[in-house]
Length: 101
Image 1 (cartoon, one colour):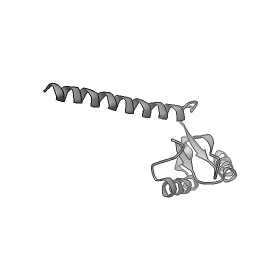
Image 2: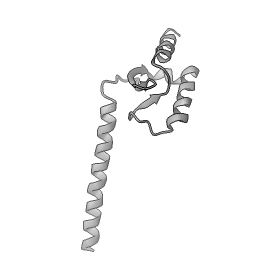
Image 3: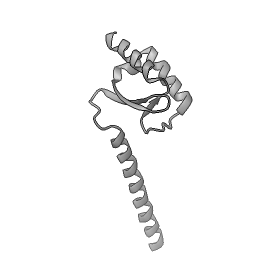
Image 4: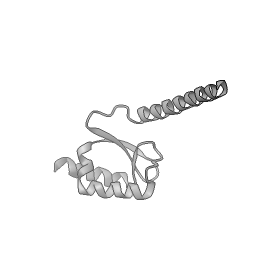
């Protein structure tokens, strides 16, 4: 009984450390993002961070980019946030067009 309690306590501590490191990662990638916006990483080799309104995610052109991101990265994004596999120039043109629509 005493051995099981020690093992349980040790497992609980490991889980807490694991969760706190994941929370720190999420907080580090979500700093300075206003309410109603999301941070995305864009670029072919160097990834630049953009903060965009959440409403863009519903637009059919942006949905195409999200489908590409799903095909390329699945749910394991290398930057820790949403990574969009397109050129920075294309992304800027798209978000500019969306801001006027």
